[in-house]
Image (tube, one colour):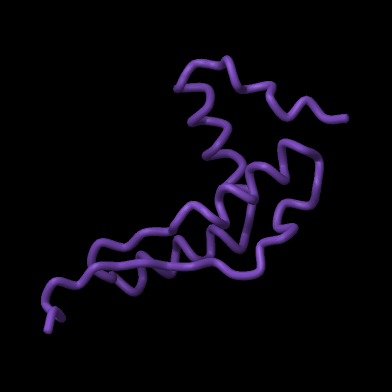
Length: 82
């Protein structure tokens, strides 16, 4: 069994560093983040579903993108309010 709670009591800086490391090691997530920059969408967001599942998978020893069927992207364009 993995020690999936090993960062539960860590300070915020350590938790953030681990989150960043896990996300940066996933080419699919990094591709989406890169494309958000390229597209220059207004107020882009990568919602937590793909990130949450990836982090949980990594911390529990499963393949990183298990049960990640898609990666949603949100953005808010206030010039397109009708």
